[in-house]
Length: 115
Image 1: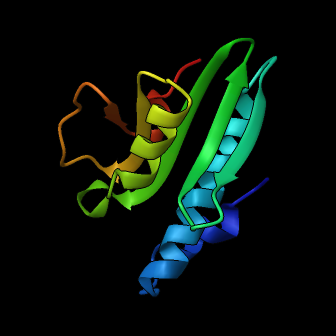
Image 2: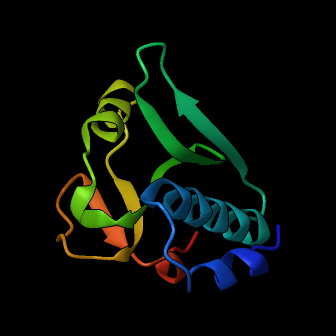
């Protein structure tokens, strides 16, 4: 759960996919460390719709996407999840919050998530 080496690599020029994977792993690590009395899942359909993290705490379900840049975030998969499971809101956790939150999605920095 320690991404210290990954933080050192941020100083280097890395391919976008590597940075995305490192960021997702970092978000995962923080979720695992901070979740209490909650379950953490990944969700993917056969046709490749995917949500990075699903947090289930009692009857509450919270879908979360982790993106280095929220500008390239496409909400189709998470919107599908919200509609299918009748969830009101999802989250996109990013280091670059350039988009405004709307009725379906909140855009937040990783340290702003609270449960």
